Image 1 (cartoon, rainbow, N blue to C red):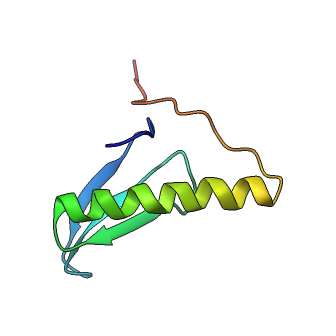
Image 2 (tube, rainbow, N blue to C red):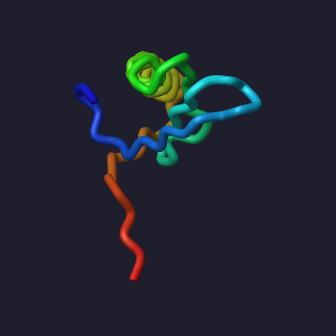
Image 3 (cartoon, rainbow, N blue to C red):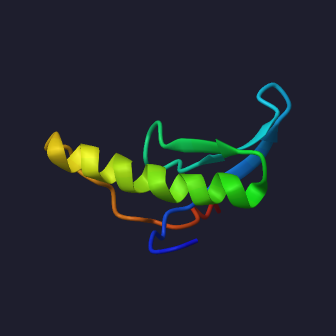
Length: 71
């Protein structure tokens, strides 16, 4: 992953017949791709767009927390 440090979840969706990549910390921030790498590359662009849109709307942009640990 590039410049972003958000946790990313990638999984295969049989329904969509594609890999889905999501950023849990950024609601609605998701992308798909025919390959694992393709979904991740597309997600990089979507994260940039998500952050840009949030800033334009005056909404807070969450700081990356990384992996959440549970006790």
